[in-house]
Image 1 (tube, rainbow, N blue to C red):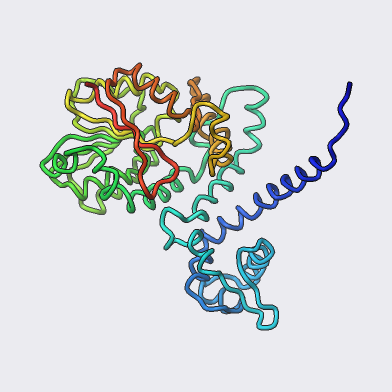
Image 2 (tube, rainbow, N blue to C red; image 1 turned 60 degrees about the vertical axis):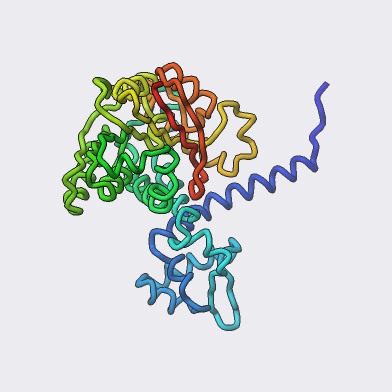
Length: 356
């Protein structure tokens, strides 16, 4: 027997779907507001006309006015029709401007445009299998570096490294450290600058990202860090490192088990592997209340999973979850695994792994 349509439920979902569509368009406006500096400009101005806002931001007024229209109808910016002025409430600026640091959601919104660029080729891989190479994502390393820098500047030295007892002191005295999947080298460059007695190496498969990292290290005059183009799957022993990190890199790998095994082999017996990866559950139903679950699964579908499958890989996806992560870490030979969270990084879990 066919059940009748629940019109109340249908209308409620239609409203929900409409909000999703509107939100997608507003996300693009968020990204534009971040990249052009409009949110930062509004955050420091009193209620102002579009002409004054455009002049302060050094932008074309007609485009600024239309963007402001989207922000007003989206209930982001407030508008005084008599004075023709626009203002960004401080409560809104607290999650939309660069001064918000890791809480800046407009920075995160840039990934909408990045992923939209690959929608058509994604349709093809849905139909035919395979995947998209890293090279398909034009601004990927740029956006990852920007997001990493925002979080790391707020957390790395003060909160993350102290998670490992005695690590800061060892870094100060001088040890050997590596960062796997380092992208533009933001994390390891920061550590190299702060711990001049330690020796660092960053590895990434991207020629462009490594070239950028080398240039930045040279610009900063750092002699204790080097960068190499290398597939993480070829990294391994002999045991030459006291500390190895991987920031949101393992779930993208074509062969994550091989990578983790190589990391364990490369660690000295008293070494530590710090794996920073998405805080999620391997059970889909446990992610329903995750505040960024739609973002994570969309990014996973259109980037993390496809770049792995493009290489004939396992396709773990961003939401492989703590349960699966623990399974693979144990399989790789890590005897001790602790999982912690860091204030200022709401996306990631911090796995502190030791071979003994």
